[in-house]
Amino acid sequence: MPLPHPTKVFAIKECRISKLLTDPLGAPPATWAASVPLVGAKKLTYLESIKTAYLRGDNRPLDSDSVRDQGNGTFSCAKLNLDALAVLFSTAVIDAGVTPNQTATWATLSTDTLQYFKLEARSASADYVNGDLLVQLWKCKLSGGPTRGLNEEDYQLFDFPFTFVPLLADNRWYTETERETAAILT
Image (cartoon, rainbow, N blue to C red; front, side):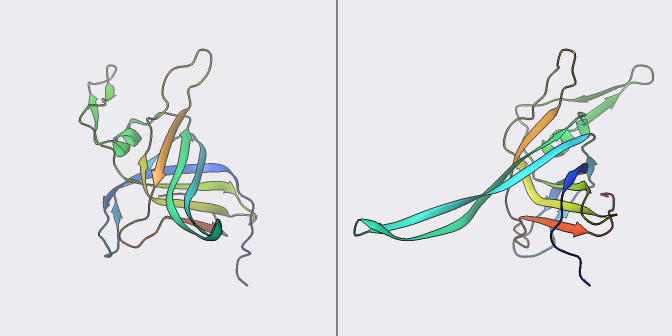
């Protein structure tokens, strides 16, 4: 018996990003670097934009047609991960020093470029007792600067707005997979 298709989607359990390395036109597969965890995943929202054109004539509507335009979303996490910033931008994390004076520095430069990345997340639960929902957005890029800062008497959360488009290799936009048995992201 196949898995029932309707399911609840409760919470976010885990989220990871991977830098896109190759996306050959019409020649799958695309490839990605090793994934980096977004520690303290809080939220993932995404939606597609649909562009509609209207044909009018004789002082009335005659037809309309719609096409996918692009996708937009936001992911949020509770902890800042410099390795994740290095995936999103073209800069690296520099580790220096020895205990007790170690440092990890990520510097943003005017020469930085935004990088494409894959975003994967999974729900904490679904209708299946031991299951989850796996979401994979295959080709994303930041569309705004991440929210950063410091808060008086509170934790700072980090929000990352992004856009997504289909892969050139196989035209995938995103995949949502209901899984009877949950599995961690690797």
